[in-house]
Image (cartoon, rainbow, N blue to C red; front, top):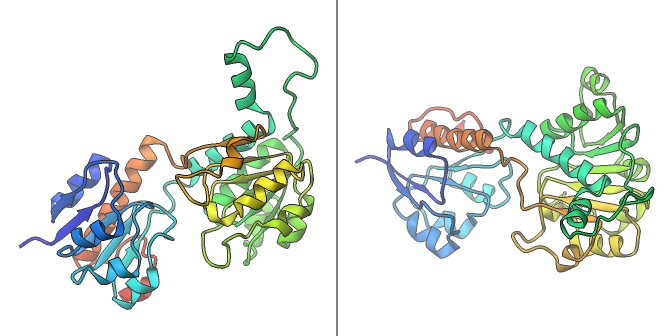
Length: 324
């Protein structure tokens, strides 16, 4: 009998083809999200699961899947998966880094520019028929060229964002527990500084850290108070990295010039205070939403699932210690 693999939600077709060559595939071809109880029930006889960042694969769900050997997530982040619980069961967890780096960096810059230049407000103004004449101060925004960009988290995406800043002649600061290799820092003209200094000196602060206990609410009241009143906060990493009520309060009180957010603390719910603010650009978690990229992510997760269940080494293990 072929091993059984659960695919929890709609994916690009290439992934299903890859899986069906080797396994019996239980495919939930829809956009609804299974709750933990449903997921546990569907995993009862599964050796593998290809999941997405909305799927609640906590310790209880993992514990209820006796045959499970691999959890392949179609994402870079894996905070929806209890990785220690999987590791204790010697279940391999894989993710899909790399393929979405450039798309997410592009989206970060789209958010940064849209926020600085008030583009959504300008479009709403035009569509509402309010544009009557040209005025010297009509919808004026902030400079980007030559300003200081602070990159918090200097992994693949943070580095790609910094590389794009070269074209805008920006000074780049970065905060990360580990300094980048000197050659890379010189290439990107990026200076390694403590987070507090980065927040104090940056005109734009862009977040690119994974969600861990150490990064949850990394940007809270104290950090927002250190930022310039003319600064903008951009977040395309994970929502809980930012204390949303604190951000709303800072924006309402004029402690920041604006924010551009692709991720939220309690997705898909957005803090109502953010929805009411005119100086915030909000997107529904579309950082990697490029057809070719999402298709590659699905295929990569499927291939890693195949690799584990065939006794081969997957390309992107999150917990490689399980592999020996």
